[in-house]
Image 1 (cartoon, helix red, strand yellow):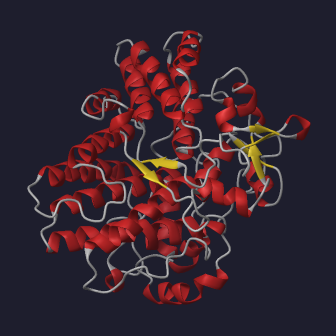
Image 2 (cartoon, helix red, strand yellow):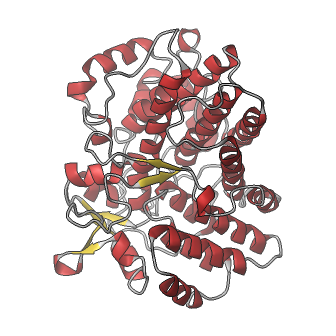
Length: 459
């Protein structure tokens, strides 16, 4: 189901309160006041776009990414299947349909159209940033995905899948246009922004996102690292410039990881690899809590110290620490020295989490030289909880950290048993948009978890 499937959307909205099976999309997170109609003001649509976007980052796709990367592992129910790479086309329906194509991406497209009609460039710029974030998630997970024809309504109910290389160009165009829109004179300013960022903060964030999407192309573009470095140097300069979406301390509006902990207790726990890696790390007690049998829990409702598993945990648009890791890697790849940027990335992350200055400096002193491997492993630790898909992206393009595939990972969707390179398109696409769906599979050379996508070829 997509924005362009109007009849299906109507019936889904009608029955969603009782029929949705994924916890991110059930009655806990449905907004009965979600706006619609031609006269709805931008201030009413922007919050829905932002909320669903940050849900997309931290909910089901984020859990898949974190499980694949062994930051988490299944302990019961479906999460056990995901740990052994049994992730099929039914498992991707909700994030594709409700999260992206009839959720945040639809809202972003709607805002861009309305803001253009009402001459509201600043709000249009914000929507372009969020469109880029969501399109980035979609193409990182699936490769070729609909975009250019995806939001045409009845004019096109079977949109084509755009080539991933072209989509990476679209991401940069969206963010460049966002910067121009946010620099424009606009008496109304940014309307409806739940984060409350200034135009300058959003411009810096757009540059940081451009750096993210450039660094992701290091395996396929020779100048990607230099472009990432250029953008990074125009982005925010401290944790204070980082923009965070703040979840509510309620079970109606809380952080997706905490909600999952409440709704599916102990079905997902900390991965053994990650727990072992963090044993001497000052962030360990902020990420996990010990349980019986040498296991560690990522969620414990009685433990207020678990930074990423509280109802009111933040969701960074893109963190300052991620930006500095990107800068460190870009410097190393372009013949520079990434040591200072690496230290700043670690220092920023630990300060953000509340680690003391003394413990922070002791830890930094133990890290070692700024090789690509060291940078990515330190980034793997720092990105825990805030952006699991980015951790998966880094692994697919660098091979770090050097994790061992699950011994039970060989199955029909992952016949080689390797750590998944992509997810399957949802069954809704195979059934309702079969020609475009098959064309995308043919263009990419397969549709299994062990098939590469353009931006992340195996070295």
